Amino acid sequence: MDTAKTQLFVSKMWQQSILPELKEYIRIPNKSPLYDPQWQENGHMERAVALVDNWCRRQSIPGMKFEVVRLEGRTPLLFIDIAGDSQDCVLLYGHLDKQPEMTGWREDLGPWLPVVEEDRLYGRGGADDGYAVFSALTAIKALKDQRQPHARCIVIVESCEESGSYDLPFYIESLQERIGTPSLVICLDSGCGNYDQLWCTTSLRGLVVGDLSVQLLKEGVHSGDGSGVAASSFRVLRQLLSRLEDEKTGEILVRDFHVEIPEETVRQANATAEILGEEVFSKFPFLPGVQPVTKEPAELILNRTWRPALAITGAAGLPSLTDAGNVLRPMTAARISLRIPPGCDPQNASERLKRLFESEPPYNARVEFKLGQYAAGWSAPKLSPWLIRAMEDSSRAFFGKSPAFMGEGGSIPFMDMLGRKYPDAQFLITGVLGPNSNAHGPNEFLHLPTGEKVTSCIAYVLAEHFRRK
Image (cartoon, rainbow, N blue to C red; front, top):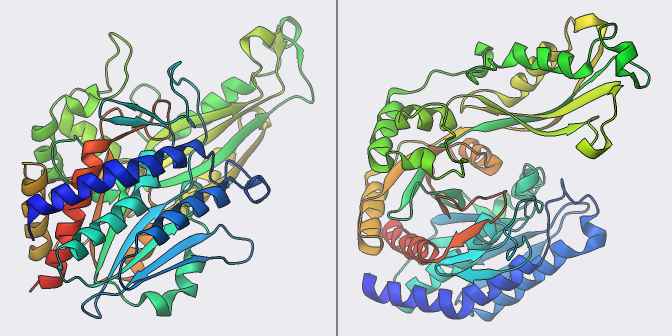
């Protein structure tokens, strides 16, 4: 492959074709079904699918078959089948649904407002994960442009990843005969430790989400009358959380939610810490003077990739500050988001969490843990020598540096499912979500040069996959 020619081709596609489409994609508030239960009636998902559908059909890739597959009552899925020069198969993955708006955007930015500022495209979903389908097809077009042979490519773009990919298994089952058995899976929905090299995700954490509610009174009472007699529902909730988490350190106390961290993973964390240094924590928007939980980069990497961690992502029963009267409230509830390491069974973790919270409630309070979604973590199989070489060569060609390897703290439910379904496949999990890109939060952005370079790397890997020994 002529890497200089590849780079020019990909850059032209990004600037002239992909960027204008991504801007229009960002304008569409196609929130995932979990955050938009009326997604069918609202029609935003259909607008996003139509936008990608129209762009894909304009690409005129030889041997491409494109279809919007629909199973009754489920979110749509884009299925693209591109004939190759062998019967071997590569599966490429992305998604179209988005996280909700979130507060805290800069005054001149917004979730549905595309803004290009220097090398950044701001707006919800451009990096997570609207760019993926454009990147995948552009990589294949770059191969066609140089008459480079490649295996048959299947591109799957789902519409409920941010809701836990609950529709995807049904589509994979329905399309199994058309997909075949991939020998390589490429996922473009992950992160990167910096924007200086190609990053390969080696693991993903799982997730258990549920709502913990505590109720002691039928209705609120005057705090001067009831406090000291009836326990505060907030205090009881705090007690229950302390069963799970050490509030001083953040350590998860229940050993059932931990796994033994592999030695190779610890070595990777140390190597990544050498690359990133303080950038492991300095990339986060800490207030002046605020410190991370530790300043040891390797420990922080293991904390966010292979250790369980608790976040409270929502609450109920708490009035706003302006509406807060002197009332002992009857109920407090919190949304529990527990990240679990690879190898920790999410169903067992869910059941364990429910027993932990609901057993022997303080003051015999009404305590309920209502399970929401859960997803398994994932750990990559050992990389083949050809894939390691392809990543090394492509990263040096397009980034100017060797690739780096690191686990990610988030979840991609699709990966665990595919890992179990295709145990002999190789996996390249990568993405453009680097420092300050802030997926799911305010001021999310896509680093455009990284998008171009990742696309070029994927083209190179596809070419080397065909030639592998």
